[in-house]
Length: 208
Figure 1 (cartoon, rainbow, N blue to C red):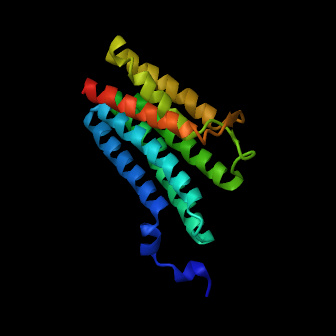
Figure 2: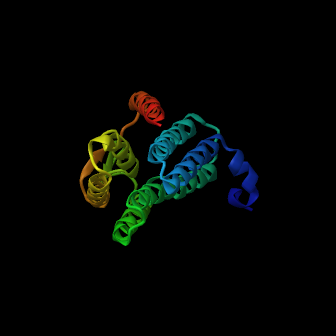
């Protein structure tokens, strides 16, 4: 009997990196809820924290030397499935909701989710080019950029801003599937991410 057959589902759930991943999923679900409700600042806060938890599950996993191979494999699959929710479905729903569910926003919604699914599948098959380089633009960077763009929402009419974020998300989807080489941020960059998420959260809470 191999170790894959011996480990219960509960043990996987109790694994600390997977708990962190599930907290990221919770953040994304909260973000989806607020996006549907039309509370876009709260939705942005949700996706920012989804990014933060997505970074930390890997950091925690790498520091746990006693994890067996199958735990790492399970964690990688869980992380990928959660990424499609956080960085595919959430921004797609945000765009659709911001566009007042107009049918013209439906193609963009499909493109975002399809590009996310294709990119994640490609990454699961090929991984990194090397230890520090992605092929294509990482999905979590999409929402970090989207959050920054939302800071300027007040300078536009609702209609104009909906077109702007539509265009930006389409460009990002193209970059996700491109062959450009993108550096993998890690190490001390996590401090920059934490600072970014905390500052942006504070700003959007103030806007609320």
